[in-house]
Each structure stands twice: as structure tokens, then as C-alpha cells.
Length: 136
Image 1: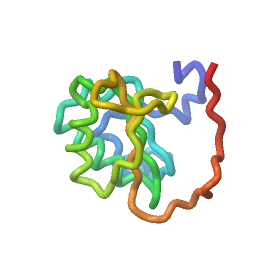
Image 2: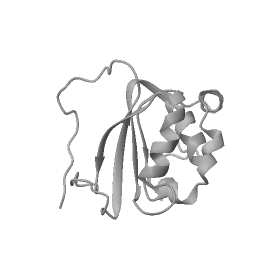
Image 3: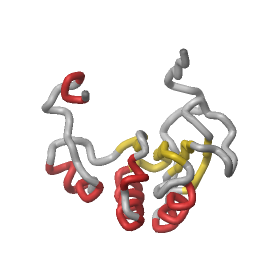
Image 4: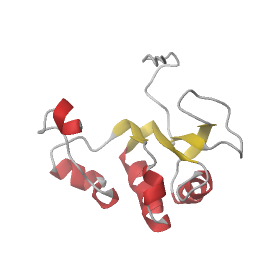
């Protein structure tokens, strides 16, 4: 899908082990980001060690005050308890957790979760929203 919609010179397919700033710089793509998103239940397919490695690698790629968003099922491997264990090895902190992409209130009974982690440091973003989220 991505190859159909984006320039193949821009798109890179990498596993967790390929997320280091050095690897990305070697591929000629940015090595720091304001926001990184993992969606589509990816954490459920990662081992506990791979999830921890993903959190470590993502924290190294985020700019100060950057955001890491993880959307997945709540009650499978890679869900909120595993994410909260993985974040312990990073400087990231949980800032929000929602029950879905519509930003519903999360509870232990929620089938899905969207967790938002923030990197240490001052964000360069203003306090005002700079995007639009449209639901139909």
C-alpha cells in the first residue's frame, strides 16, 4: 500500500533492529522525529525483548519533547502492561492512554489502547493544535 501511494525513494521497510539513528542516517533519511507512531497491533507480534528494544530505539529517535504513540489491543502481548514495562528502560513517560483512536476513556476493560508517551525535554510545538483529526 505504501509503495502504491508514496515515492519508493522515500519509503524504507525496517525491523525494530533497524531503527537506530545511525542506521537511518546511513539510509539518507532523518534520524530524529517529533512524532513516531506504531499502529495496527504491531506490538502483539513482538517478543517482550523486541518490544523493549523498540522503546529504547524510539526514545533515541525522538526530539526533546517528542511523542511516541502506540495503538494496539489491550489484552494481548504488547498491550499496556508490556508497554509500561518496556518504557522503564527509557526516559519516556506515559502522558495519555485512550481506549481507541477516537480518544475514548481507557479502562482495564477496554479492548484497545492508544498510549501516548512523551520524551524528556521541552517540545518545540506550540500549545495550539497544528493538525486536524476528522472522524466520519
